[in-house]
Amino acid sequence: MSKKEEKVLINEEIVDLTDRVRLVDGEGEPKIVDSSKALEIAYNKGLDLVLVAPNANPPVAKVMDYGKYKYEQEKKKKEAKKKQVKIEVKEIKFTSKIQENDINYKVKHIKEFLEKGKHVKLRVFLRGRELATPEKGFEVINKVWDMISDVAEKQNEPKLEGNYINLLVTPIKKKIKK
Image 1 (tube, rainbow, N blue to C red):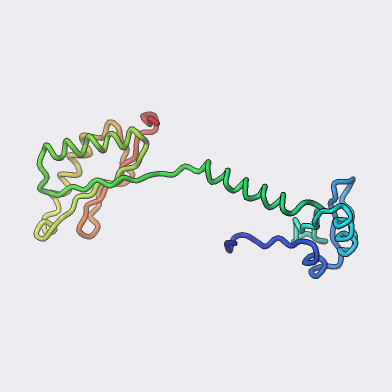
Image 2 (cartoon, rainbow, N blue to C red):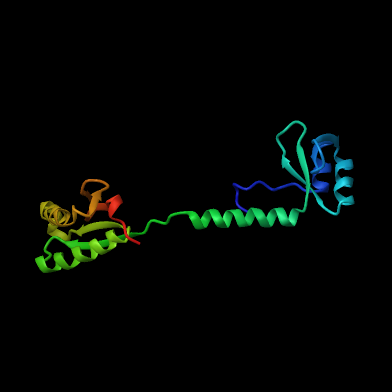
């Protein structure tokens, strides 16, 4: 159980916590009863007493099948997780001394990734003395950007970070294919 989830109190745990509860049993209006009486009502129906609103005054308890309730909560979590969009970031590396045909080859792959809706991180690796003149790396990044600007948007400007010049590009919204 994660820290975000609060432990749901059921049956005797509610009796230990509070004297009175607002009971919701599916029959008419909620009523305020002793917690031991509420537990007795739940047991007579063959169900559990579950604390649904512990911060209310008095706390709200509901008569229900706890196993079924827990199952439905898990099912809702799984459904929510399925609906989440996962953004995949592909990384393409260059050097400042890359040849034209190699750039063209990598640009072809970048365009394929962008058409599939993936984000692409362009990285120019600077080695040794190349760090003294990062302009050549920026030239490579800008050259690649000129070749893909029709299918991509810049998330940020090219930036020197350590030995790399980085640029994150994303697909233009209307060009995404699945």
